[in-house]
Length: 80
Image 1 (tube, one colour):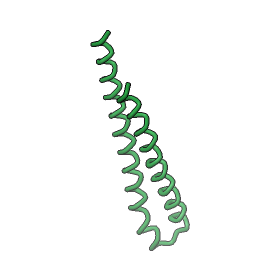
Image 2 (image 1 turned 90 degrees about the vertical axis):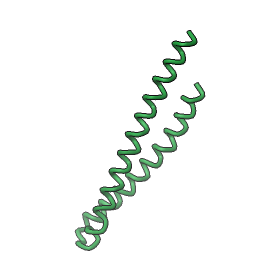
Image 3 (image 1 turned 60 degrees about the horizontal axis):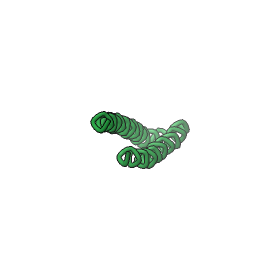
Image 4 (image 1 turned 45 degrees about the vertical axis):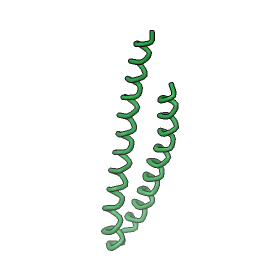
């Protein structure tokens, strides 16, 4: 139960980071749409990297959640 509570707290914190990265990426995409060639060349790789990092963090959090849920279920079965 303690692990699950810890996971929930971490999930909220990480989700805020993911949301912040996606907002920053969206702002970069808006600047790219201004079609300033130099700005686009600089921002596009950064936006792509933010997108990849946000996806990786979300995926890692989901995998960790699954592992902790399985662990909790196993402990409940052992103590039942």
